[in-house]
Length: 433
Image 1 (cartoon, rainbow, N blue to C red):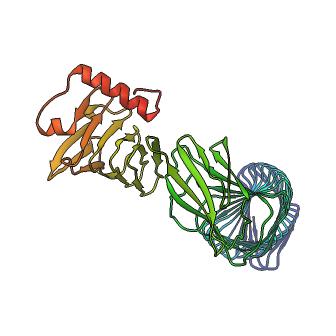
Image 2: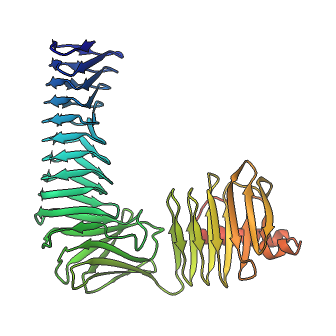
Image 3: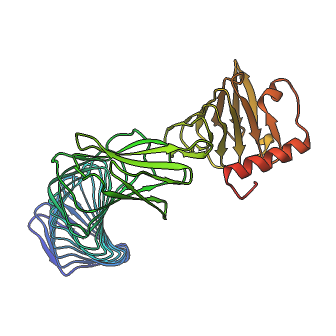
């Protein structure tokens, strides 16, 4: 159904792949879309559309007023589209994308609002049980998150005055810009550093210096990189304020601003605030402890310590730099990317899960060993400087020591079994395949 300029449609039911297109100058009211039914606004206006399970409304260069999004339904605003006074109920979702704007959205219990790059959500209200997700390049202003509501910040900018009353706020990336927060003592502000690299930049960058009386916490991953994480600028937190430290879902205890640090599982967590009200968390490793260093799906540079480290590079093109320890780099059966391993005066063991020695080729290039996957030659691992360290390659069926490979020597079966037992135990992995 096409609603052209000057035409008006009311009470239309869209389902089973049915589609309504509202052109510039056209008006649709009280439309219901479900089970694959879609309403497209391409310059036209829609009033009081009801979206039920598997129904959708796509707003581009048009305007949707008073849309109700219920369970399993979605409203997508982009390319000059505007949505005003939408209500997002449990299981429903509103997506504000490049060029789209949402004004006065109400996110109710179980509802979700997503604001991605180039999208704007203005004067939204997130009620108890509702959630809002902001990504890099997204914008919001005058946001209100009520008691029991959740705000997830993976980037983006919050302008104006944003009111958080009993909300849960998770900051999960560096570069979140915020003008001002009005937060009460029941608000919980959590810095989730589990996917953030040390020294990556300010996580929450504020333009107005202010005091916050909310509860603070930091969530790290089990393979968290050591170093300094800049949590916030201009936060002006009082000395002695407690930051709860969590390792995944495990609660470790508290570290106090410019006060007592927390030491747990061989790692020390220390929170400091400098004279410019920049709040930082420093993670340092105790002597003799094993650090697990985990990368992302992107290109990472992962640096170890003088102790024994376990590296999980992931799928990207990574650089793994050991120092002096007895280190392990774990490569899963899935994609490796193109990694470079640098080690100085230590032992680096490459542990391959689900990969046999016959699945790869090994070639020398100067003082480097290049390991290439036969099934996908774009997946390569270049081990640099074999004279500077001892390198072991542990597959599901054999062990090859790099120096012995160069000298055409082979380990005994006893050496293979002993090495596999030691390496797998060190990596903290239960499976041996």
